[in-house]
Image (cartoon, rainbow, N blue to C red; front, top):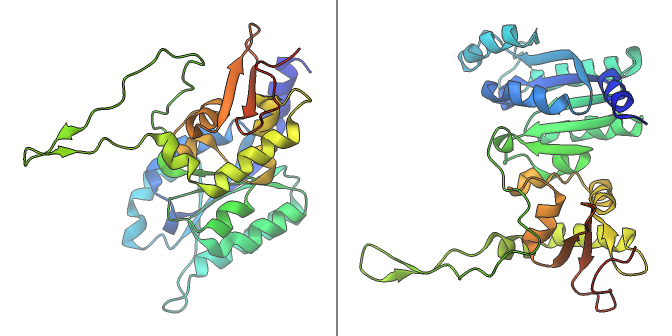
Length: 275
């Protein structure tokens, strides 16, 4: 498929963006829509909340600027969140009455987990946006989930594949004249993330060729199929940088610009990817 055809295919994908305004900051709407444009067009845009409440007063301009339809939902009883119910009802109505390719649920509330699972069971992709406090069941249920604090922030690109040797970070003196230990490298932290490491190793094993090397694109896709992993949630730009940051994988790039990854535990891998 030509690039132009692929771009047209992406633009033709219809996405329903449903925002739980009680749990999403209004300042991230532009970044959310920009991210969704990679997957299709958010032609349905709705935000749910009690718009008479003081907590949503800053949302008004954003609704107008980005053509988001506000859905009013009063709190019928104290301690109950009627907004969630309204969003779920609309999502199910859209599922059966509109021809959509995907949904996007913007919230940090795990109560939407059953909704996401139902939408995916009906063959729809579901993208999620939320804060770091978002419970893991909701995050894991989505096709892809991106933490809001990563949107619009500078990220670390993949480092050169054959960097020159660098000196170790030195300890810095603290206010008492003593020295404070140097910070741990990011890779040390990522290598201790058992879930992430298991997924990345499984992705490499599933896509590795006989020489022990896997195409980076294939390994990244295999990782996404296991869980809604987005490298930006770990502070890096892409899967190449994520694999490298753990320190557990060997990554090389050939003269054609193609990247390959191998598990360092695999002693039977060749020194370089074979053609």
